[in-house]
Length: 144
Image 1 (spheres, helix red, strand yellow):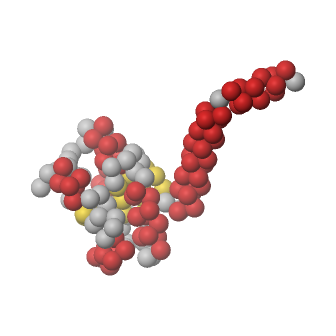
Image 2 (cartoon, one colour):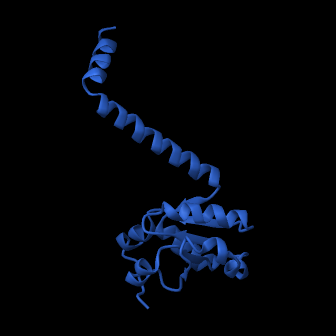
Image 3 (tube, one colour):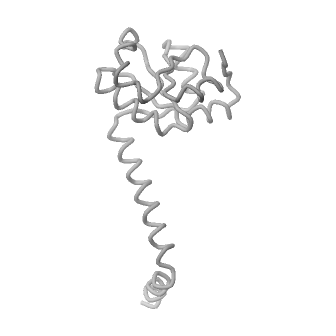
């Protein structure tokens, strides 16, 4: 009982810390639920490379033009997220192949995967960690 009283005292003395903790916890749980409901699997750079080599996967870069020009995965298709709903038909010729969506860190590309799933794409993956994870794994980038 004394421990519970100390917790209540701590909350009373540090309300902002308490709110920040539960706010962060809520965001993490919400993000995880959203990821699971999207039905899209997150894969790392090495798994993405294997998928590309074995099943001729397509990389979809949904970052903005400035980010894309700074460096992108070679032979990736560039369609910024804002334009994807209007340009998704450009990807129809790749429907039978795995599609690996990526952004800077892997969070925006989750939304792209959900959109692709709604348009009938079945093998959609999110590059976990995005282009930052790709760079960290010392995999090639193109600036062309």
